[in-house]
Image (cartoon, rainbow, N blue to C red; front, side, top):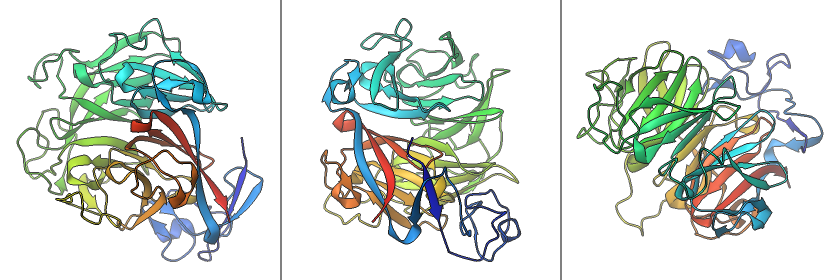
Length: 395
């Protein structure tokens, strides 16, 4: 793996409080105005790994293609491999990337050299019926892989040894009856693991749900369900019912979800064209970060806006304190600061399949993201049927 050393000089932080450390106030960071989004953002120096030195003022993102390019089901290396609408991603501690190959209804495994194989082929073969348009992935602390079986309205668990089971939901196309036993879901999509909870977005019901895997308990963290107001900020709670808090926040098609700092979730609110920050401790609130309504016309200038973002991951390394968003409708990858400032990392709103640096690169409806500890961003470039990689470099 390429090793990185990030050098920042944004403030007079002490070296004992490195870039990206969790914080509740500037005292934790050792400098003024540098506890942003629950992370210290200004330090003397920070080793992401070790090796290449990078100056923050000249940091850019180089896009390359790891695997895929043509629609299909083939395993293989690099462009020999085939996907059909890859979406959610999960990265394990060894550097293996898991990909939801949504239209192939299966899970793929991609190693650091771009070698693609079908994961759990006897349970979930590509082109089979084991999954139905799966939409979310998360890795648990013990290596369990959680999968949103979106078309069947349930969440599945796969152990490291390959044993699959239904964790929550009834695995049927009937999404009604939230109070049924077991509780049902309405198109579960994004997944995020924050012990002891697995958080799930329900795209059709406009909710964020929680699951306790060890007990099977299910409840609602935020959102009012079907037929509610399109967007409103408000409170949330670990409710055992379907509806959340009476004064609670509302969503419109929540999809991607990611854990930020402890007690913080980022939610990609697709049809509100917004990023939401959900803080569940202390207290429980939902706030809109950035854009809070969608452009009405395709001709509208959305260079400073999000358009139907489908995925989000918490920024690490040089992006600690920010959320990284798949700005799906704008065909680009962006970082969103704690104050809602949007910074485009790669892509230019021009649909295409071009590798390159920053705005030179092109994507087509990217809808999955995950970031490694070394600062690389993996992207499911959905309509291009490719897995792309953003690598931080200096110029």
